Every structure is written in C-alpha cells, then in structure tokens.
Length: 439
Ligand SMILES: Cc1ncc(COP(=O)(O)O)c(C=O)c1O
Image 1 (cartoon, protein in one colour):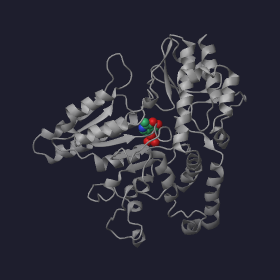
Image 2: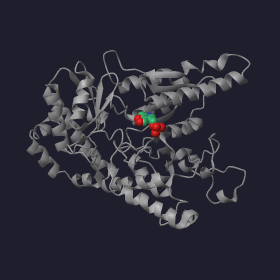
Image 3: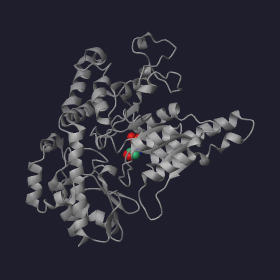
Image 4: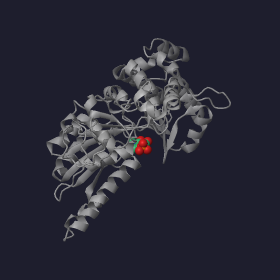
C-alpha cells in the first residue's frame, strides 16, 4: 500500500471500512483466536511463528481418530481418506502454494530434517568446489545443519585422504553474506557479486526465502540465475516464505527447497514440513539419498524386497510412513489457501503491511525504526521493528495490552499481520497501543 492509500485509513472507522471492503474478510472467521484468561481483546501478529488453528482442523483430526478406532489397521485402505496414500491428498494444494508441480512437491518430516535430506543429495563437494553460501545470521537450525554437513564431509575426506588437503572443507567452506556497514539487510547486487566472484568454489547456495530476523525477502529468481551461471546448486529455506509470498519455484528453476507448515500455513505445532525438488531432478536416481521404504516404488513397496527403487520426483525422498493426524490438521488449512488463492492473499498482505509501516512512521518516535526493507517486493507480512532505547520493556508493555508479537535478541520486535486472519482494524489498534506504550 502506498502512503496515499494508507493515509485514507486514518481512523478506526476508516480501518473498519477497509475491512468491510476487503474481499478476503470472511476467512478470519475460519480460525480460532487465542483467548487469554482475562478475556481482553487480542491482536495476533505471530503467524510467522505459529499460525492459528483453522476451525475445521478438529473435525479433520477427529475423522482420522474415528477411523483409527473403528477400523484400526484396516484404515490404511478403508478409512474415509485411506492412510496408505494420505500424503498425496496434500500434494496439489501444497504445490500450488509454492508455485511447483505436484511431481516436485512432497509433504513430509519437518524442516531441518528435510534440509539434511536435501543436502545429502545436493551438497556434493569436490576438492575444487566445496563452499556453501548462507546468510550471516541465518536461522540457527540452518546454520547447524550446514555446518554439520560440512563436518561430515570434512571428516570423511580426512579419513579417506592420505594428505591433509581436502580438510579445508572446514570453516573455510562457509561463505556468510553480510550486509554493508551501516545496513541491516543484504543487497541483491552484493549477493550476485559474491556468487560471481566465488562461484567456481561454490557447491551450494542456501538462503532463506525470507530472513526470519529482518523480514527481508530475497530475489530468489535472480540469485538462482546467478548461481546456475556459475554451476552452483541453489536451494532455499522457505520457512518464512511459504504461505506468505507468491512463489514460483518451478519457473524460477530452483533446485530444491524445504519449509515448515506451522507458521503461515497454519498446520499446527510441529506440523509436517514440505520439500520441493525441481522436475529436472525427478529421475536423477543416481543422486545419493538417505533412503526409506516410503520413498520406494509404490507398486513393489509391500513385496518387501531388499533393493531400494526410488519413486520419481520429490516423493522419492520420503523415508517413513506419514503422520496422519498432523496431516489431517494441515489439510484443513490447505483447503482455505486453495479457496483464497496466494495472489489474492499476497495483494492483501502488501496493503496490510504497507499500512502498518505507514502508521509506525506516523508515530515518528526516534527510539523505534523498521529494519525490514521498505520495498514491498523485498518483504512479506513481517515488519521487524528495532527498538533502541525503548528496549525489551516496550515489548512487555504491548504484550500486556493483548498484542501477540515476538522479541528477538538483541533489540527487535517482530510483527506479522497475516492476510488470512488479520485485518486493517488489527493494524490500526496495534499502532495505537504502540504509540501509547512509547508515550
Ligand atoms: C528459517 C527457519 N529455519 C529452520 C527452522 C527450524 O524448523 P524445524 O524445527 O521445523 O526444523 C525454523 C523454525 O522456526 C525457521 O524459522
């Protein structure tokens, strides 16, 4: 939303009118909002951490509980939604959310597990090309995953080599992208410049779709093109991008991606994650992978033979049989996404977050500043508000007033109005609370 639009919503009545005209306004009623014990009004801006429960989720889970009670093992074939192919019920809707083909998409495991599985296949260091590019300040789990993959390779090299040469695959293997001095976010041209300069040594580029701390959305297409020009594999962690941005994973030619479903995708705590593997790798059966029976050819899986025959596409990376109860809850949310459509949600999201930015600027208090890029193409729902001298007590005060926002050390409050269930009125009320607490 540009500031002239935002200026038109200058009172609570204006915000309520904007909500009344919002074509997605009815989706809010599809979710449960938390009710703290004192029954005060709340503003839920932490869908970037845990999305709200879709009202239908309970019935979806109960259906599976009932089939378990009624049919037990026979539910694999005879449940209302048979369990044997259950993960397939989620594939098309999930694929649409990330702009992928069904063959490129699978719902399985959780995010960091999927990241490891993808790296086993797609991080193939050689003596010459062994580096991994990540963001400095990447989400810690990604940092640990990447460093541990490097360590596994490094120790294998050391054990197998008679010289010490490939042991450089230690810390020297990590390239951490850092913002320029005095800046908080990365410039695409600097990312591309690093790829061009170091590209011959880079085996893998692995960035977040949206950085969890700053809320910066990266230019996935440009980064992928730059990586591929230099012969690098390019993957993304879409934890903060799936269900937030309009993504085109297939068209942007990305090699692989992983994400979780408990944030913007409202799948519930610890919800089952997702993985994307580009169609061009669908038949790359020579890629090493960690195998398990659920990735094995469906026709012969139950012949229980000793030889692993991977399924084509992303499904071939599955290991275990899927968690039906979790998937049932996630289905309830994916149906809402299908009905709403990502492009409609994204259009509303740009307005909501633009309005939030406008109101924070209007407060004009020099103790707070927005870290997230001003350009709406470089962010999703979230704004990260740096709180200089106001400090953590400001966060505590807004929380005491019913705002769900989170604090990230050392000095950031993250707020993420989610277009499915947040409103212009929420944004207006939040800004009023922020203003009052600053005063
Ligand atoms: C960017 C990012 N990566 C990784 C993770 C870890 O996810 P999981 O616990 O599902 O592996 C998170 C969790 O919030 C995250 O935000």
